[in-house]
Amino acid sequence: MRLITPLSAKEIMKKLLHKLTKKKEAPSSRITSETVAEHREHILAGGRRFKYPIQYAKHKLVINAIIISLAALIALLIVGWWQLYPEQNTSEFMYRVTKVIPVPVAYVDGQPVLYSDYLMKYLGSVHYLEQKEQLNTKTPDGKRQIEYVKQQSLADAIADAYAMKLASALSIIVTDAELESFIKSQRQTSDGEISEQTYNAVTLDYYGWSPSEYRYVIRIKLLRQKVAYAIDKGALNVASTALANLKNDPNADFTALATALSNTNTKVAYGVSGWVPKTNQDGGLAAAAATLNKLQTSTLIKSSWGDKLANEDGHYYFIVKLLDSTDSKVSFEYIKIPLTEFTKELSDLKKNKKISRFISVTDK
Image 1 (tube, rainbow, N blue to C red):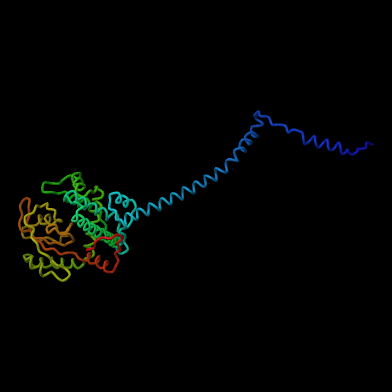
Image 2: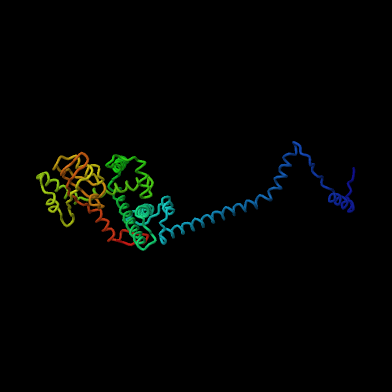
């Protein structure tokens, strides 16, 4: 039997020193199919120490970009608010901005009045005064007129917004056919119909409005007219009474009839046209008269654009009687019944503080 003798302390120390001093065998630098995975992992491991610091920096860059963008947006909104409300900037640029961002200039009975609608009316009026009336806006008189234009433009925009609210409640609309029919009637002259291109050029020259802007203005005006007729039962009753009287007495005197129909709420007026073209731009009165026989009276006429014979805005019922006519002209007398309910409702809203304006203009 072989005996295993314990190693001496000297031998044990010698073995330990041999292991510690033994050099680790360096891996081969040669890439083979067996070592390609090892080399790939070696390279990726070397790049990982750069990955995470960049990732952290990228995250910080995104946060900083968001903060800067929000700060810029807030600053832009503040500047825009300042320009529109305290400064009341009425430039073409601000009009274009409000066309994109529909901010209100006022509220009427909860209905927003768009700033763009107000500026479109204002800029159109100023364009006309400067180009056709040669108004100098820097003179004292020019500044007074500009303030008046601001007042009128805002009041008109408020009335349009209220009409849109009522139209929505009453399911009243203006169709494309109605819009085009009205514009076509406006292109009629004593020399015939002017082309659409010429008409658009005239609109641009007078008001600085594009065809789409002009059509928008006309559509709202026609809508406001429809609403005014729909809600004014008092004027309709007076007009119906006038028609009934004329049916009973076709030769009734228009002057006396107008006086008899007038009351505290409705002031019925009498007028005579004189000789006017059958195509006269008077809201359809001359066109209606041209269809009548001499001394014949018409049915009830809803004026499409105020009382152009008296150069008055507003909405009216008309009844005309043909006095005489030629091949191209007519002469007629008429009575007109004004619609007052829409204006009265707006006045009541103002008294009850249901109209809020966000800019300061001289009130009427």
